[in-house]
Amino acid sequence: MATLTLEHVAVLLRAFRLELSLAVSETTALVGPSGAGKSTVLNAVAGLLEPDAGQIRCNDEIWFDAESGVFVPPERRRVGLVFQDYALFPHLTVRQNIEYARRHPADEYLDRFQIAHLEHARPGTLSGGERQRVALARALARDPEILLLDEPLAALDSHTKIEVRAELQQLLAGLEIPTLLVTHDFEDAAALADEVGVIVEGRLRQTGTPADLVARPADAFVASFTGANLLHGERRVTGVGTTGVRLDDGTLVSTTDDGAGAIVLAVYPWDITISTTRPNDSAMNVIAGTVSAITELGNRARVTIGPLSAEITVESLRRLDLRLGQQAYASFKATGTRIVATKGGTE
Amino acid sequence: MKHAIGVGLFVGVAAVTLAFLALPIVGIYVHTSPEKLLDQLSNPVVKDAFVVTLKTSLLAQAAILLFGTPTAYLLATRRFPGHSVAVTLVELPLVLPPAVAGVGLLAALGRFGLLGSSLSALGITLPFTQTAVTVAVAYVASPLYIRQAIASFEATDPHLTAASRTLCAGPVRTFFRVVLPLARGGLIAGLALSFARGLGEFGATIMFAGSLQKVTQTLPLAIYAEFDQNFDATLAMSGVLILISALLLLTLRIGLSWQRSPSSTSPSFFGLSG
Image (tube, rainbow over all chains, first blue to last red; front, top):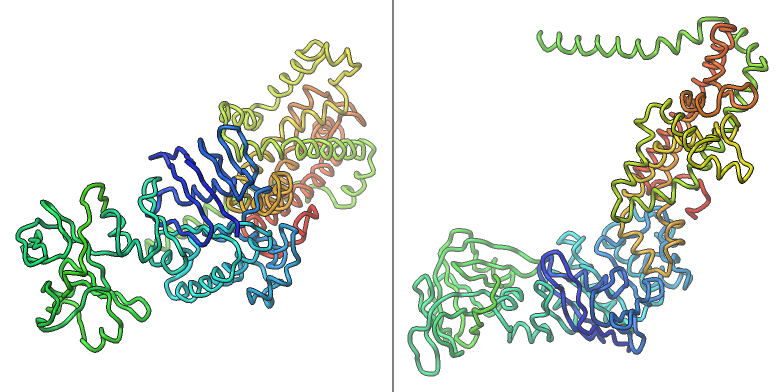
């Protein structure tokens, strides 16, 4: 498999300077808030933008090198770029779009992406999912050594998104080339990529497997971005092997992590249990409050109680018959909490 | 009740406006009998003026298309120092009184003008030739095409050109296979406008090229020349110009409707959209 390498690539953007090094050999996702410079990275790799410094290589082939002044134009880089809005040519049919690069006849791709019946249709008449398949087919028919996906799921409504994400997951797993994708949604990144890099204001904060990032977020931003609840408080007492933290609202919670002074505690939504009566079990931490939000995401639901968002199955949601404004208890184990540094936090 | 009076007022004003705009057109066609008008079409003055107009207009529009299109694309897609000066320069002939344009062309390209001696050294004399008519028409009509072309190129989604580049197409192939087909409707509309403006060109032409039958006398110039001698000929030529203008206006509307819906099936004009 090919490897894409970015070394100290720097681009001066309006609000900050993007600077990062990255090696991509499987499916890698860059996640971050909008305006973090994610798409800029893709444009730099594709050759649509010339960085101010650094080097970009695909295997041993240098695509960009600031020092020696090498800049390979986009049409000579073997890159397949799928745009956020898919950027299909509106005046060409699906077949003509796929054959635009004149590398391969469209037939193989029409079959593989199950769009043969749309061969003569124009992009304007296609649904979001169909457009994405055409865009992917077009990018792959170009014979790329690396695939770039810009917010592959952002243009879809939440209903089709889950379906298309599963489709994309399957496709990426079967691809023989490294893929770099950017998204603002950690869940999408975790679903699609082997490795995830969190990028904020042009800098990589942390890279690792999705599980890594959730289990050991490097800072408060990564923690909140990966979906963790952040509880602010101060260290108060120490129990048997646990640290007591008094939260800003007065609740006392325990954590197995150790810390001092002002503390930010990360708790992941899927580590929180919800009950309608005060629980009496091994969970050391119970926060009582009213249900202020219920969001269903497919077969799961995020339920907000006081300062905490918990993720439970829709089945449990129905069984507990949770309603907005109702009193409920969120409990989580001391071992399910993580102290994350307050410094550098941008929540 | 008040409401009805208000609506009636608007309808009345609109009716007066439309009548005012239509009257001169109607006047030309009903002033003499159609037979007389058709007779005048074989009048040598009319025939010559028609040929001169058609020849110079087509040449001028070809030049505008050839030079204006790349210029417009550059101005639409690149920002550089002096960009707004360049755009102003492109638009200037639009607001310049045509007579001033004619004087300017004489002062620049005339025998004693800025480039006059260099031109005569090459054996070229421009003023009062048919080429001078073409030059005057191109100068005066070009902004109408170039402005519309800039707007059409600016409306082309930059993601599409970027996509084309990542799909092995260099800038030139991208221009011909993506930019031009998508801007096509707007370009046709602009050309129609520019053509219409060029057909009516009077001031700059008479200053720079004169009004010599068979050589530089275009339809508008012939209309003026025949005005007090053969009014029927004047009417005939006016009738012809009205027909052509109406045809151009129709082209413009069709062009603009294509521009608005680039995804619709439309015939390939330059043979580039296939």
